[in-house]
Amino acid sequence: MALDESVRAQMASIVERYPRSRSAVMPMLHLAQSAEGEVSDEAMRVIADMLDLTTAEVTAVATFYTMYKRRPVGKHLIGVCTNTLCGLLGGDAVYAALTDRLGVGHDETTADGMFTLERIECQAACTHAPVMTVDWEFMDCQTPSSAVEVVDRLARGETVVSTRGPAIRDFEATEHTLAFPDDGLAGQGGEADDMMLAGLRVAHELGMSAPPVPGQES
Ligand code: FES
Image 1: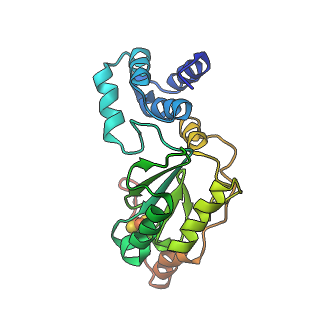
Image 2: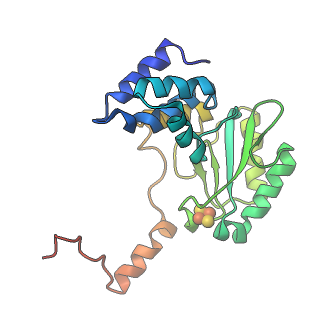
Image 3: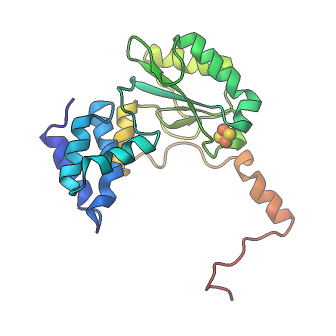
């Protein structure tokens, strides 16, 4: 789908959120990805026009952040954290298993357009390493076989639920949420578990506390 009038109207509503219009550039790029499955040259020109920026300025943002894709993403974006902790605890093996299953490597898309695979950096979820994401939803504590099973189930059209979030939708739906965060799904998924709270528990046991906020010391 191209940037039709509906998409442009949504972009205009994003611009209205901010006191300085240029602040809208990032959610507008996510909305473009939601509509087109990538950030196209046309999208960057449209955004630049709407924000009174140069196309070079919008391009600088779209090419700096790895969440913006300059070629079409599959229906599902599969990310495998291969940063230090996840890599050591099995992330490299998870990535290798998915490469075998999908027949693609980093930043490549399967021929049927179903899956794009990529290595990703630390997701700040190291307590549940190795971590995989599907359309940016977490799949915690993966093994090579569990990761392949997730892909198999998605390929069969079955419902897959994030280990700490909602049922997986698709890349374009998640991108729309990144443009319009109030998707009604915030309450879905489990609460913080023991592994997430282990550091806090130890801090309490040791009587540790955060330093006061500057200017608010009592
Ligand atoms: S190293 Fe993978 S989530 Fe931190």
